Amino acid sequence: MNIYKIEAKMPCRNVMVDFGAKLNSKLSSELWKNSLSGLDEGFGQFLNINGDSQVDNFGVVLNSSDFLSCVVPFPIFSKRAAEVLKIVDGLSFVDVGIDGFFDFCIGIINDRVHFIDEGKSRYRPLSNGDLIISDFAYLEPLRDFYIARDKEHNSQFVVSDAFVELCFENKLEIQFKKIEYGKAKSFFDR
Image (cartoon, rainbow, N blue to C red; front, side):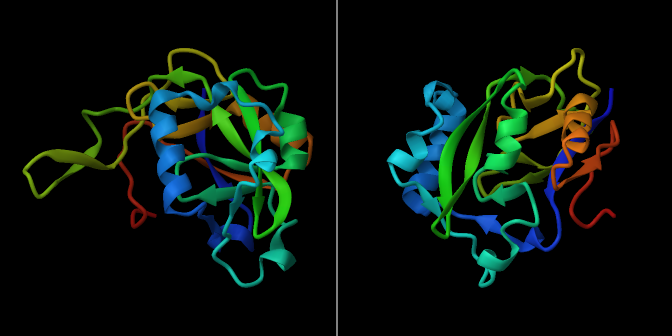
């Protein structure tokens, strides 16, 4: 099985959705507790959750990608993509807006699989002497899935060949970067 990182298509690569410090913090803490799984699709719009794209021309580029990156490690999908992906086990959606366009959903990933290779990952020291992973290395997962978070490292999520095929079959505007097993790569390792 191959695994992949999800990437936005150009020209949305510069979009990094920010929901503001208070909501980013709430989403991050819920990620660790995995308690967003019970929310239904209309919840985010009901609460008027609206993120900032952090780009000037979002209204022009918003239809060029069915996936957007977020400050907190949640995938953001277009409603078009969410409609296709709603058949995926372990993935649910919360409606959100970006720059006032309520055409998006946060993907809530409920499936957990072990795929981070801690032994081959690179670490950096913190000021207190503790070590933190700076560049993740990946193991081949032991079971099939569509989209999953790592069991120990909740900030890391990947998709499988089946997820990629579903997106291609439905002509979703999403790019995928294949992960090489056993090698820690940083942004600078091209």
